[in-house]
Amino acid sequence: MKAGAAATLRLVLEARSIAPEEPCLLLLGRSPEALDTVRTRLRASNLAKYHDTPEADPSICGLRADITPSGATVVTLPEVVHTPAEATEMATFLRGLRDAHGVLLACSATDEPVGPPIVDTSAEVLPLLSDFYSGTDLPVLLTLTDPDLEPGDLEGLRAQLQGRYAAKLPASSTFEVYQLSEQAESADSLLSRLRRARPLVCEPLQCKALVMTQYRSIREQLGTRSSQFSNPSGGSRKNSITRQMSPPLSELTAEASPGTTTQGGSCSSTSSGLTLPHRNHWTLMVFGKTGAGKSHLANLLVGHNAFRSGDSLSSVTGTDSIRKAYNADKSLMVLDTIGFGDTKLPPDVVSRSLRDTASEAPGGIDILMFVLKKERVAISEKETLAFVTKDLFGEECVPNVYMVVTHAGRLAKDKQLRGPWLKEQVAESETFAEILSMMGPLAEQRIAFVENSDPSDAEDDEDRLLAERRRARALEEIAALLASHRAPAYQHSLMKQAGELQAMRLEEMKKTMQQQIESKVRQELEEERKQLHEDLEERQQELQRRLEEEWALMKNELEDRAKELARADIEPLAQELVEKTEKKAKNWRCVVM
Image (cartoon, rainbow, N blue to C red; front, side):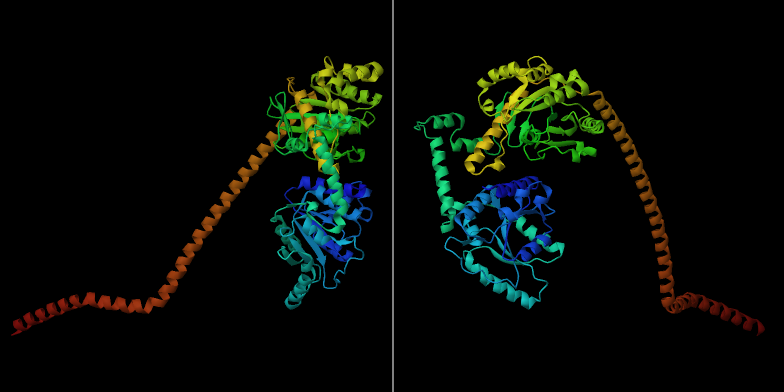
């Protein structure tokens, strides 16, 4: 794969490792304006802007990688490949990408239909993708970039575009037309649709197009090489060495597959990074000269690309003077402290590094890992180790110091070569001898040898599996080295003070929070009591109002009824009074007579 395509592939794989749950989209389109419109409405940014990789310029490699705010990756492909070499380049890139969730076709009503190939070796990419990804399952979305259309116009355009592109795909393909507007909700809806799609693995060998002849030939040659690696009858010295150093591909696949555990002492190493025993949590700090491979080693230990390669002094501000990451189960924290890797840094940079190290590791550091590249040892590397073990932390940290030799080549594969190599280095380099002496007694037993191998740089499956095998071997090497480590964590006085200050600050924040919560609860209770009182008064007023309204409506009726009731009550009394009156009158008349 050419440098430009390889650089673009690295950018995409790194972005996908950060947001693995987000979809990977393949973007095609005849019009650069339509492509730009789709990327703009998806709010996608060119990944090359975030990395110093001019070779990833799409004008150089014909590919472009963008990332959306949510972490979805958008890979722009050419719509037509003109030669078998271009087809091979694209197929190798997509196979390295491994899988994809869907194809976006940027189009509009003004696009002209794609004409026939100019020469016999040309081919449109859309049908190739259909074959690469088993056609019927990979969603293909015609993404309209036209302004808002009337419903009738939209339906007509849908039919026109479906007729234009459907002939290029199998009849059973998942084929949709989607209008991508300027509203953010439109892009979110499209990405949500593709998140539900099952990612499909790319296998270009499924494609029988004439333009893929060169790719099939290359893969057949690689297949022959792979069979030679596992063929015991191979008689050449090269094949013999290869069999000793590289098992058959089936073994490589098993060794590099996720979940595989390699035992080293009582430690373990998996695809999720390094796992160490004895303690619930380990803190490991890598330090060394810039370019020694610290970031690569740190990424290997945590199991993902958390650290960028190359220390930049321009980024050493605030907490950026120290970088940290965790492995999958959070049992290992790896610190990469820029300020301890260069003795020529200004004092304020070193002080910030020391401050941030103390803040991140108040309980101390279990392992101080000095990273040394296998090359001629420079005095600056001895000064770096002396700065940490003598000037900065002191000799009390020496039991926690280990060395990792990177780019070790054959030394990483053959342990029998290490002893003679160390003796030779000590004999020939006084600087190297002084480095070993600073590591204390039995320093040779606290050195690991690893290769710097990145699977994302592999050109084919064989190289990728070999890279994974080297990574697994490096993890096993480090795990075995640290299996017998029993020294307590090194805790600088500043780390202890940082722990005490953090505990004090935490207690202060806890009290402040408690006071804030109590005040808020009291306020809420008071507001509820006030609201309850207001509600009670309001209900009483409502009752009084209803009473007055009901009384006004029924007053006359009730007065009449009260009169009737009173009349009924008075009537017996009136009768009794009349009877008494009549009796008295009768008696009076009798007396008169």
